[in-house]
Image (cartoon, helix red, strand yellow):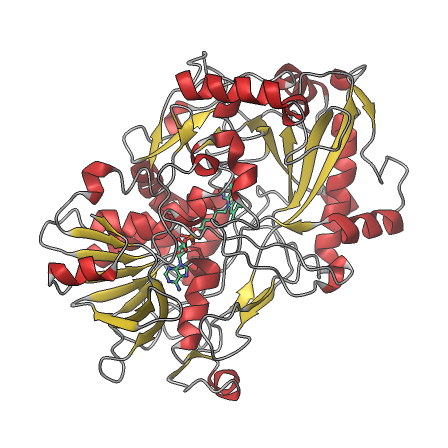
Length: 570
Ligand SMILES: Cc1cc2nc3c(=O)[nH]c(=O)nc-3n(C[C@H](O)[C@H](O)[C@H](O)COP(=O)(O)OP(=O)(O)OC[C@H]3O[C@@H](n4cnc5c(N)ncnc54)[C@H](O)[C@@H]3O)c2cc1C
């Protein structure tokens, strides 16, 4: 059951076997799988509220309104970013059941085979390799027909997908007016080859986007893994508005107690798990809870007045995110999303169509196609710096293509959107505490584009996007370059354009990273147990040592499935 009030949990008079901290993407997978055994009782503590009935969450194309700066968001902002001219940028995280899977843009990309093989190498544990994780990808995924039931032959490769999993994945359910131009570009320009399925392990090239959507509505970990048939299990309970402040030692190395608040000014509650606490509070929440519990760099914690309990210097370090830059080309058409975004009558008609039939332009996110691309060796910076990509078949950058501006458009004009993303970044940052008060926001410094390599890749990606939009397929359609950049821009001009316009993609990982057993760095062992402690694991994206060249929700689901199986196995 799902409860709003701790009193209802107390009435159950239960001691739970497992307490999952954070009902987000990975947390709800763990809760679902652990409660498959009717003898195991599970409680999820989620700081945010219910996802039910919230249109900005449910209607796919409304995803751009769900964050930042809303009640569904933790509303974090980065520290001033040195490489972005000292600007701070929004750093949203889902503050609602389903976590970031309830507010993300739903793009489903697994990354490259090499991304996960590097993960296994760093962990020194083959269980984290691509081949060994494929069964968990299939357990997660339920590939479903698109909302418009169009013929999807040639748009994906069925043999690489799961059709009996829990979370729905599908192709676009509404055709866009640029679809054929994108495909023609892949046939015309060898720099942009077509890839029939970027989720096969070989992701290079341009292909059709896949999204976590079911019958025209968002499929999140809350709607899928906590669907009624699961959350109504008598051994699975979820408490909303439960903000965990610390984990507490039950005996010296045994951490099975969680402390939490419901009313931020009110009483502290604590609960002790019979078996384990699973931290699934995400790449921001998990290190923050550990540090407030005295688990982290003990001298840094002591200097803030937090009693040091267990020294793990890597907690909060190694923060890695992608950097993104949105560009929009003026086009000779009114058939883009910009038209409805500025016309309330048309927008109301589109919503009425979605509401009555779950059809029409609102059934998808704003993206149509995605490209995973490399900086070719000849122009390489990699003589001077090591190549940050996971291997020779892993992208350095991504192009995200949309039929219109992603988010609110300017007052006039219709656009082709191409966002450039550095997907194998070398830059690393950190999450640290600003005070001993667990309710104060942490200092989030992803250090975006601080590495020269990342700036090089971003410049390359911008020029690549300009070449894409200059292909013959767009002749007569694209009528103007993006504001502030064109094919003759110099490196210095591009650098300034990048510094003024880039932001985070909200794919943070690495702040409670996995490392081999016995390593003197890292936060969790390959079985996701916090190093040196008993009774506490981390199962969320914070354990990934490198960010995959992918949108990261698939990785969070995979870690949830793999982590749950490790807990069950032990
Ligand atoms: C705006 C946005 C757009 C994105 N778009 C995409 C996309 O299109 N495709 C994609 O693949 N990825 C996308 N991502 C990234 C992806 O959604 C995340 O990487 C992934 O969902 C993270 O999963 P997680 O389980 O690690 O954390 P989360 O899903 O964030 O879960 C953490 C949960 O813990 C809760 N929590 C945190 N602290 C506490 C506490 N102290 N007490 C109790 N509960 C707590 C949170 O409220 C949250 O529910 C996007 C992210 C954002 C924010």
